Amino acid sequence: MIQILGAILIISATTIIGYHLGNFSYHRKNDLLQFKKASNMLLSEIEHMHTPLKIAGVNITNRLNPPVKNIFITFAELLEAEMPKEAFEKSLKQHKTYLNKDDMYILKEFGSTLGHLDISMQKNAISLLNEQLDIAINECIEIGAKHKKLYTSLGILFGLLINVLLF
Image (cartoon, rainbow, N blue to C red):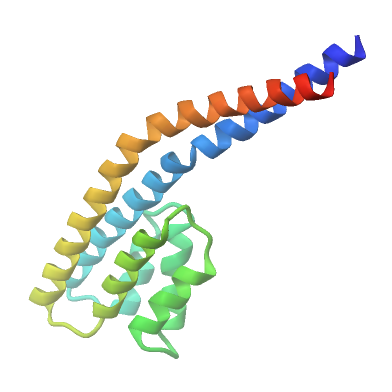
């Protein structure tokens, strides 16, 4: 009886681990969508209201979810002592997200344009960022469903393998 309970616990634990690994693309997609939302709100603040970057960074945080909200809060705080590029990179590094290296590269490139361009060029930079984020979001959608099934199945199979080896 104890062996059966142990086997069920092992299979359950590995299945849960596989399920959480499979959800990485889902969380990455949510982070990317939040950055897209943030960039659109930032564009609106800069283009239509002519809001300074620091104040715009604070204004958009009210409508964002963590961790992107926390990134922009830190960004606005760091703007007091640092240039926008360095402040944005530091705020990206300080907060854990589900973004991969390519996503971080895209955001760092965008961060390097903050505060250095006029409004029309800033609008073009945000449009380019949104196009790149759309590509990454579509990639997450395509890969996400496959990975979720794959990792959940691997979790179950790994649990069964452990049970076979132990018993």
